[in-house]
Length: 379
Image (cartoon, rainbow, N blue to C red; front, side, top):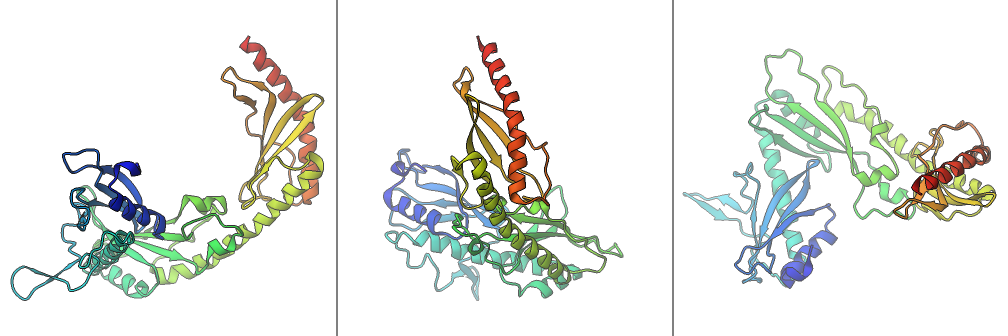
C-alpha cells in the first residue's frame, strides 16, 4: 500500500486493521473515487471466511474524510442487510446500535471494529441460510455440530453446479503457536477440516459421503505438512460428530510428534559441527536449514542442508555451492539437490553426520570438476 497517496485518516484506519486483526485480511486493490486521482480512498478487502475469502469494497470519500465508509458486499449476497431489521410496516428500520452509529474516523481502530462486526453478522446470515435448506441430513449435521466453537458454514451455489453446504471445522484444542519456542507466526495457527455436503439428493437411498479436505495456512508447513496426514474413511451412516474424535486424536499425535522433531533436527545440526565446523547460517526456530563452509584441498564451497519436517524418517537434501566459481551473471555455481546417499533413520545422529561427511568427501571432487568445466565453457 502506497501510504503517501492515501488520505492520512483513511490510511490510519486501514493500517490498524491490517496490523491488529487476528484474521489475515488482505487488500486486493485500491483506487480513487474522485476527480483528484492522487488520493486513493476506496479499496477491496479479502476477508477470511469458511476457508475462503469474501470480497468487500470499502468506500471512503477523500473530500469528506471524517464520514463513515460505505461497504459493498459481494454480488451473491444481495439479501445480506446486517444493520437493518424488518419494521412493523413497510420498509426497514435501523438497528439501534452498531459500529457505524457513532463513527469516529479519528479513532484508528474503528474500521477493524466495523469489519469484525460485519463478519459476525455475515456468519449468522450464512448459518441462517444453511438452516433453511430442505435436507434432513444437513439439518441433523447442523444440530449435532452447531455448538462447536469456531465452526463456520456457508452455502455454495452457482449456475453450473448444484447447491452444496460447506463447513469449516477447527480441529484440536491445541495452541500450536505456544508449542513452538520462539514462534514467528503473527496469526494463530489452526488446522481445519473442510466438509462439503451436496444438497437435496433425496432420490438416493444412501447419501453420498461428503468431500473432505484438511486445510491449514502455508506458514504451518515449516513445522507440519497436512499433506502427510491420511484422512480416515467416511463410513455409511456416519456424521461429523462421529467422524471428528478419531481424526483429532490422530492429528494431535502427529502435531506433537512434529514439534518433537524440531529438537531432533537441532541436535543433528549440532552433530555436524565437529566435522564441518560451526554453521555459517542456520534456522534457529524450526531447524529446517543449515549451511556450512567446507574445503577439499584449496577448493572451498558451501554445503546447504535442507531438513524435512519428517526428519529423521526422511533424510536431508544436500546442495553444494562453490565459493570460487561463478556464472557469467556473477551467480555462484551450485549443484542440484542430492538425497541419494547412505541413510538410515535408526542410526545415531553422530553416525548420520559421519556418513554425510564421508559422502561429501567424494562428491566434492565431482562437484569441483563440474565447476571447472562450467567455467571453461564460458570462455
